[in-house]
Length: 151
Image 1 (cartoon, helix red, strand yellow):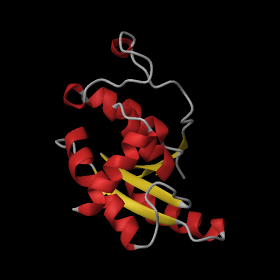
Image 2 (tube, rainbow, N blue to C red):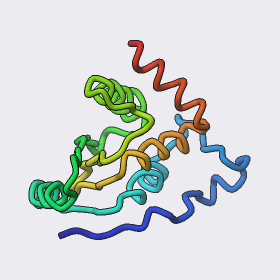
Image 3 (tube, helix red, strand yellow):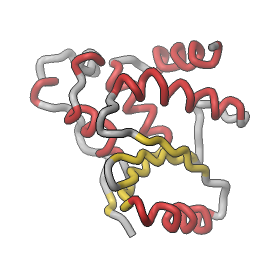
Image 4 (tube, rainbow, N blue to C red):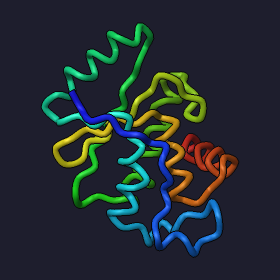
């Protein structure tokens, strides 16, 4: 079916060792490796693209609850700026339109398509990656979500 990933490992790299605890590198300094480390390692399951529909269907059936997948395509040319400026705000607005609080999500999985695979990431982990990459705490994330929702 897919590869299981453990998202509980430390996410700091050698270049982050000089930053104050809890601070990420500035967003404009993010490279592909930092993005991969912050996002792709949070995936609880990595699925080959052609198997995505089967796997997501099985997960919905097995959950017995309303499991929702939000699909995001991240091409090789797109990076953190695209996710920060387009994907996260759109996701927050979409969830709010569905009467779901973007900060208190349950049973939502972000399906991040990159290359030939889908990386299945729990919504809470996806938002934690945002906080880590932007260097904001929970209050800072709440403030940004409010901004996204007022646009």
